[in-house]
Length: 596
Image (cartoon, rainbow, N blue to C red; front, top):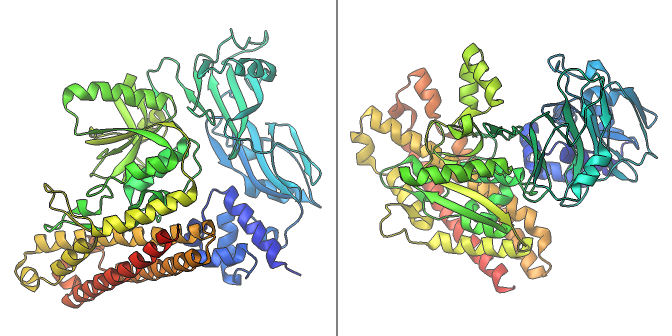
């Protein structure tokens, strides 16, 4: 008989092992986050039609999900310390009678990994006693059962559990040496024969391979002789760095993109930068802590910049405070100032920190600087436009040659006109204190006045101005196709931003419900979460029904025929409805805050 409680716990464990939030998994399965929550708490089981998608998303067989055994492999990663491959689906079939036994041999590892760098298999598994991790070098036997005591995730500082020096042909354990060197609290060290003597029979290049645990699990990092491995500032992660410092690339930094429930480019970049520091967070939490989930701005000339999270309010200030992070900000620097700022950026990269910047590529959206080449003459980045570039140039040999040099990161095209560099971390406020701070930002931002030198409206005034622009019948009757097309495109972009913000608000409020104990606070916060869920659904429906500017441009359809008067009137009515719901949200937020 299928136990919904056991299935729910299995889904939760597998989801977390994949690094997915409930919202991200829900998006992949085309269900609501509430459905995922009901599965994981044992209140319901997934629909039969959803099971194949769930199996694919979690990289586990359906039987393993519905009929949980006492031993489950949560993740299995082949790696050489520089690149990695998820082979969970290949390892799972070897689990039989709550026992895993296999040789980590050639079939698991890509044939393209042909150099002499040491390779290993990292495995995270769950038994009734808890979640553990272990590893084996390539071609070694791995055996696990429900009684196996693997490694458990550590605290804030990493713990090195194994170290090897050499290559695939000849290597030795240098774990004892690494334990000794850890006493010196070095910020970095160079892989050299002075620190790690080579074997007499070693031929070819030597490599240092380190296996370590941190709060997030088991990891491996390696570097060639002469290169450096650096500790992150909080000593929770290790990074490989070319010792000549002619180049430094923080590999493994995932891409950013619109359409992934992370449509505020500033918050997406901030979440990525915080994660690189080893700070456990999510996009929705960044939106909530910063207050950006409450944002709405509008520019009367209908400009794309209205969607920028920081255009009328610097949400980076409260979010840094919420995480206990110091920050340095540079805005519109002149040529003389840029040289010093670039040196600071390079140092941040060497310390494993990702600077956040706007206008790195294509258009003024936020991204992160991920590395540099040629001693800093070339900067590398992740931006919200990377997918388009990779899609267009995937088969271009010259582009592929560049990608080998830059480890898959695109070049920065423009000097960013705004940069945020995250500094040291100190004690942060509690999650409850951050919730109260976010609600105060909500009340202030909806009523805020734009700066004297700014043409942007915010909050209720922005909604009112936006709706009035939609109902300016004379303008639409007189506009030419180019002007009409631009306004349609700006409207679509701003609706995307507003929809994303209120979806994040609903997610953040639901996540915050367990933080409050007062029944009156709980009731108000719960009602507020439901209200923003309703608002997000209304906005999502409207946004999906809007004509897509990209499709219109591709098909050559007339914008004025695609975006009808009735559609604009319905959107204006919706914005008025949103304003009404926002006022209800204000009242509920005031209730929560009055009871603190």
